[in-house]
Image (cartoon, rainbow, N blue to C red; front, side, top):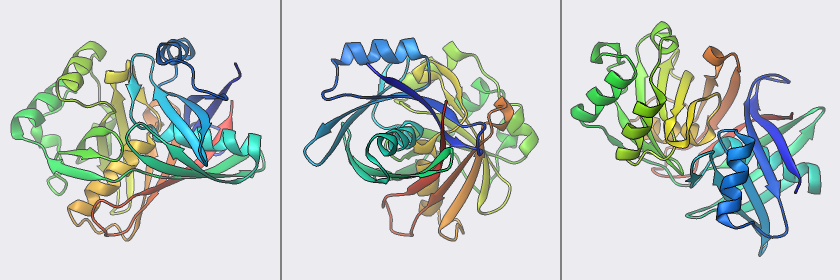
Length: 276
């Protein structure tokens, strides 16, 4: 079995979030995919096999299967481009059908995905207080313009927007405590802490304790969820936002999300990928 290791949403030839990619004629049994993902140790590994006119894809973290993973989809796009040439590829997930396109650009690949539909809803004060306490924050750390929310862009996320970049850098928590909290509230992706530098430039940190990972350096599904949330609250996004993630981990990553004002519609998330 050939396992590719590709960092998605890289900052040129550095940074990005490493993903495993396995392309086979048929998908292995679920328990084998889980064991492979655990052995690789990246936050997600994408497994793909041809089906009809597209690709059947499943994603596994070291501890569980996840319904959708943006950075692993970008990595998969780069891998498919390496194997079959530049183009667009239809992907059949457990609960949705999406697409990814990729083109070789020197030593890198430029790739873009179309997310599953998005949705968001406000968080209760009780859940907000519980989450903030776990991550070392008080309610005064929040940006009142962007209230806490549960958001979905293929997977479930919580979003908390902080009022200074310094506070974002101070994020900390215990993995086991975060895991219990996320599993109790069906957060199968990440808890996103965000700082809005401008209306269209955001800094992000994403805890992925539910998957056994302290923090992701780049999270495409969370980028789609954030874009959908901004659309839902009528934030002046101008059709696109840029997200800088991973800086506090020393793995600077760059993501771009483009989207319309149509409620629930797919979000285009793009960036570069580098083979490790």
